[in-house]
Image (tube, rainbow, N blue to C red; front, top):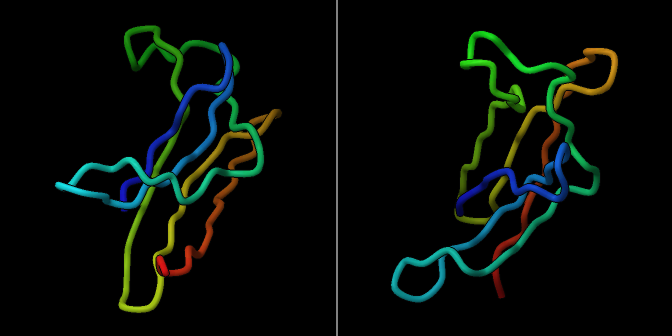
Length: 90
């Protein structure tokens, strides 16, 4: 499993998870977050003035399922942690 943010428009992202496919490629999309994630409201001077998501992510697997976690900074500066359980491939 591999998880990453993917741009949906100029200021929003979705968290997506891919399962490994043939030859170790990650082409099988298995999860997409159900809500847009927003960048911070102003560029961050600690990151050379670039916009950033303010993110921390996690992907892990067991014999029976995989789980993912990601963070988002909601409007008004409220930090949220999200997660999902992904069933095994059939």
